[in-house]
Length: 352
Ligand SMILES: [Zn+2]
Image (cartoon, rainbow, N blue to C red; front, side, top):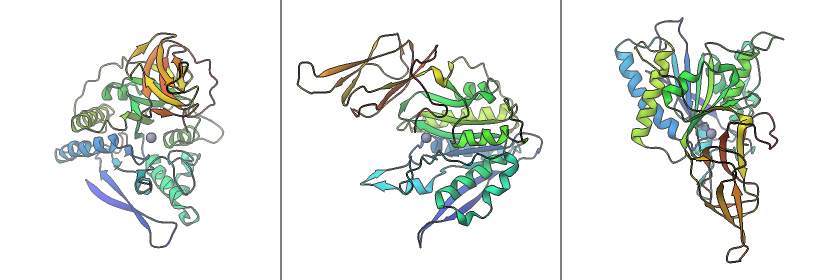
């Protein structure tokens, strides 16, 4: 394992960020190259824990001469966000200076323009420099895995249609509980990487990208950071890398049997009014149409002081909010359903 650091000078005097990058050199240039990062949203740590144990396994594989494809790993992709504390609370999702989501506004370019990502970096603020460096590394690879987590959540992934169903092997290897098939229409890291590959040839947008993968894996909820869980996830990802030929070891993957639904089939359950939310149902549960999901106490103590939130259609509860005081229109749950939601959805990501 080789280690290096990318140095990012801050936008104010006296500040410098250091981004550790770990590399395993592959012996076979013909097999896929791999890029893995975690904690782009700086307080999403299940992936960082996974990577810690994955690297243990990869060092063993390296000793045994089994690393065939180059593997580049950024265990914590966002030192800028990790240092942002606002009145004692870590703010890892949005850059406080520009109010932009650390996982949006990645450059939408062709992979042919990859080198330009790291040219004249001085003209960009530090967050954009970070994004450009990450994307530059990813676009040098074939399999790109961005490890995130949701709030309270099952393990699931956002996978662009362009990689499906080939990517069912990743879902199987990681034992995912659901796959959300996305449209590739956002500027999130994973989708910007897919965009660059789709637009490799000028004027000819590819619909399918066989042999490639760029994916956002949601490794359950923000607090699901435990040694056994992280070791199991690391073993799963190791198996996936072996099955795609990046590591020389025999693996057998079963078929993925969980639900794989388009984003249009996700019911985003929102709070109709502000108040104290009492959840009746939990993640992992299947609900029927019209079933009670939550009661919101809108006027505590009053006889008519509650409103009910019910399931618009049957489905699997994939995520749930960890907040208990909710604002009007706050996201309460994501439910994966068999049919499209009647609620209008803009193309792109489900959440800001
Ligand atoms: Zn995230």
